[in-house]
Image 1 (cartoon, rainbow, N blue to C red):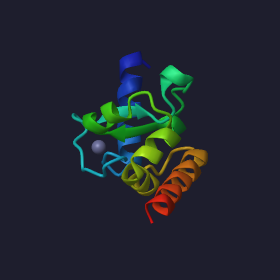
Image 2 (image 1 turned 90 degrees about the horizontal axis):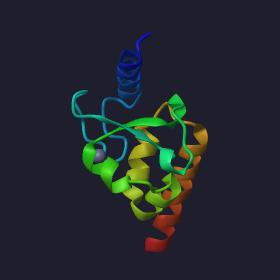
Image 3 (image 1 turned 180 degrees about the horizontal axis):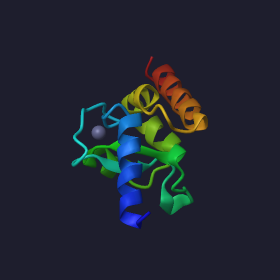
Image 4 (image 1 turned 90 degrees about the vertical axis):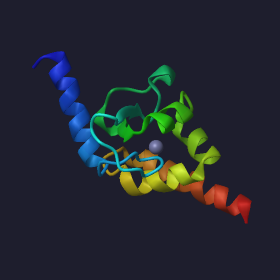
Length: 110
Ligand SMILES: [Zn+2]
């Protein structure tokens, strides 16, 4: 398979697994405007493994930047809450981390 075809298939599959939404803000996206986000950033040692890929809008992708998922969810608990709901095919460790970050943030806010 050609590299660009593979990439497109990965994006389509990821997009479908994420309920066609940005997993961080929950906004419905078209495939054309959706971006692929590496949950654990490539710049910090993340991989192209499908369990590390989610669909995100451009705004959230930029907001997250090179933050680790636990740093991002601690700072933006709403993103963690949506992530738990919509990122259905990611590694379970990410979901566990999101749950922890969100409950911690809620405890601190209370
Ligand atoms: Zn978003």
